[in-house]
Image (cartoon, rainbow, N blue to C red; front, side):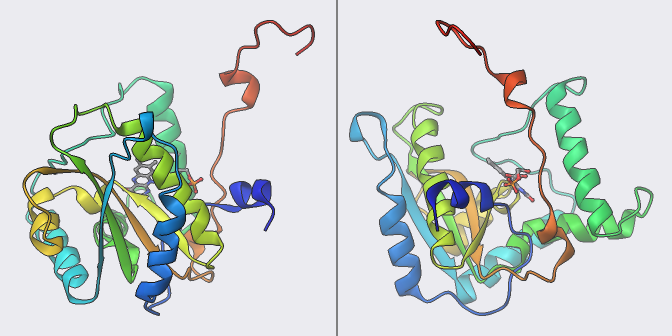
Amino acid sequence: MDLLDAITARKSIRAFRPDPVPQSVLQELLEAAIRAPSSMNTQPWEFFVVAGEPLARLKSGNLARLAAGETPRPEHSVTGWPRQSVFRERQVALARQIFELMEIRREDSDKRSQWLARGFRFFDAPAAVIVCTDGQLSPDGPLIDIGAVVQTLCLAALAFDLGTCIEDQGIAYPEVVRAAAGIPAEKRIVTSVAVGYPDWDFPANRLASAREPLAAVTRWCGFDQP
Ligand SMILES: Cc1cc2nc3c(=O)[nH]c(=O)nc-3n(C[C@H](O)[C@H](O)[C@H](O)COP(=O)(O)O)c2cc1C
């Protein structure tokens, strides 16, 4: 696949076929991902790849805490945008798009809860990569490097016909993730990625997420013409 085609084709996958992903494939995928650049080649990433019984425990632990109404306390939070902001507007637009595809009405709280729960069980992916950094590093220092390795992983996944969804929800309850994946205290959990073979019949997987026009997010300096 052409590189630009791959970049355009990548999308978040929110339903997977049950087929397991062989460890050898996940290994090749991660070998490609770690070619990502990092500040001064510090490579401040570590992966805990979870499948089978440990992943089942992770999913059920997440679901139990969600059902108990426990407030998520991730070790790295991506949320926190103002309610009156373009960021919130984009979040709402995404949810509308997903709910329309999934035929979930705004007032249908049962279906909305069921949808929410799917994220906490890694959208039923057969594998999840928990991406950590070393606790000695500053909270935001490694984030650009981690972003680079995660996007590289998501792009490389396409070469194996795999789909991915970067997942905040999966690591909402760090104690659950630590226990299931055996993550030691000195590592900080930054994000997670659901990995598996996409279920292309699932409506939400048809989603084409929106982007602001480039002109709205770009200023050109030193060019004669735009
Ligand atoms: C840091 C990060 C966390 C995310 N967490 C979630 C999540 O918890 N649940 C989810 O459904 N999607 C999650 N996503 C996926 C985004 O919603 C998605 O990337 C965005 O809507 C753009 O869509 P696309 O990936 O299909 O291009 C996350 C993405 C990023 C980068």
